[in-house]
Each structure stands twice: as C-alpha cells, then as structure tokens.
Length: 335
Image (cartoon, rainbow, N blue to C red; front, side, top):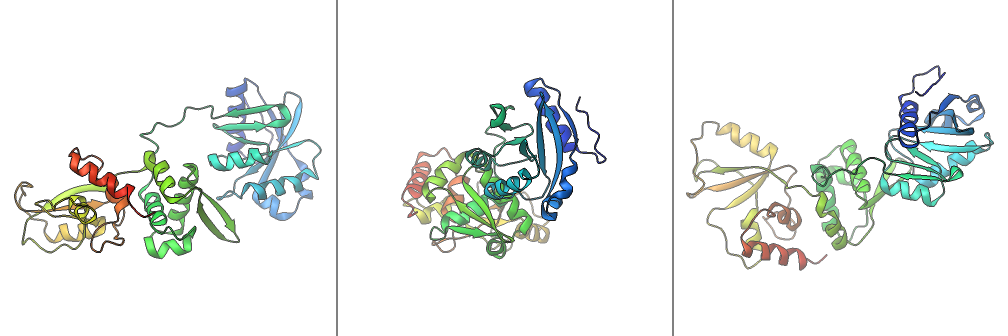
C-alpha cells in the first residue's frame, strides 16, 4: 500500500503509487516536500509536490492538477525552475496527457508518470508504455461536437488554425465543449493545440485529405433518428440529405422520396406541433427527415448538406451505385 503523511488527501498520489505497484511490483513511499516554499507563487499555485522513494532513489513528483495542460515546452521550463531547488530527479505527473503530448515530453527528455498509461523515467532506464489495453474501435468514437469541429476545419481548407472564440459563433458550442473537442482531436493524433495567452489554438498535423483518411475509425453516423412526414402535414425546413443530397454531388438520380436533415431542436418543435400524426408508411410518397446529432450545414452546393458528413451518413447503404457515387464524391472533392 502507498503510505503518505500528507496533511492533504491526494488521490493523485495514490493512483501513482498503485500504478507503480501494479506495473513494477514495487511499493513506494511518499512524503511532503518542504522546499516548495522557496518556489515562485505561480508554480505552487499550479502544482503540488511530493517526494517519492523508489527503490532508494529520491524523486520529486510535480503534480499537475490544472484543468488544462501546458505545452510540453512550458512544462520543461517549469521543471527546470523546480530543479534549481532540488538535487535529484523531478518527475512531472498528470492524470491525463494526450498521446501526442506524451511523445513530445519524451522528445524533450521530460520524466513523467501518467497513471494507467505510461511511465517515462530515463534516469532509471524506464519507459513503460500503455500498460492497459487500448480501447476497441467501437469505443474510439468522436463526440458530435468533435466531429463537427473536424469537418468544419477540413472544409475551410485555406485556414490552418482555429480557436474556440472563432468556432463558437459558427458551430454554436460553448468554450468548454470546444475545449473537449480539441482534446479529442489531439488524442486521436489528428491535431495539436497550444496556448497563446488565454487562447488555445488548434492546428491540424497533416493535409486535409490525409486527415480525413486518418479520421475514419473515429467518425460517427451524424444521423440520430429517421422519421417520415406525409405530404401536406406541415412544412419542415431542412437541407437535402441522404440520396437526395448525393444526387446534387453526382450523376445519381433523385430518390422517389425526398430526404432532408434537421437538428434536434428543429425536429422537437415540428414534432410537438404535429404530435397526433397517424402512422406513416415510408413506402408511399413521404419526406424522410433525418434528425442529426449536430447541426447539418451546407457547403458550396446550396440547399444540401456538406459532403463529408453526407458520406458518413451513407456508409450503411449496400446499393453499389450509391457506394460508387459516395467514393467518387470524396475522392474528387477539391481538398
């Protein structure tokens, strides 16, 4: 068991001790570090410190508990300042660090521990990577907001950097939601985010077409539900979707029943106004309404959903003509 004499309860230290015990079979001991009183205030407000005895080696844990992680280059500078007050190794610790940032920390030879994921202690000759099993492809899916950010960025191919302040009024998400989206894109190793002052800037790592290709395992079907509306039942405003939209991007003919996409808010208002609808037979003349998980948007083709979300929404179609049209649309898209 991890033993500690801290005057404060540290679940983070406990997780580190448990991780080391499970991976190395070593029980570590920790104690408070009194030298933190000699550090600048901005360091003591951001980090907590503990001395960890690992097989006779004294390591100073620099425990990051801030909501957002600093760039690895900044962390390295912080560690250098702490190192001036400590004679042995300093180890950065945080509960969650993106895979991309872990690689950057290793490149800069920064010792770190991420409980449950990785331990890099070059002073002790240790580099233990991803001890736990990686999540299955079924679990590795984007949140709707993350996919919306990705697709917007790829369609704006002339832009290379994106901030929450610029994306919020366009996509309709809060700064917190966009911050989580940035984290997911970093975790998927599609982009990197760095801070300039209080602003966090997202930049994609590869060209648009390559990014789209690498993003495929993470993408979700944008369609939450499909409903059918009879002619004359009420006007619902949406963008052409499904095969109706695909017909605008290809030589495919229009389907018999028009398909449109709306977001959850539009559908909620419409369905409440026509709550007493009789059961509709989708085989007769109807309008198919796709309710999307994020707001459907048009791009270049007026009145139709943009091609990237469209291609994902049509993944399950077995008709060979549809599949060929989708492939042609994405391959020939002017990235």
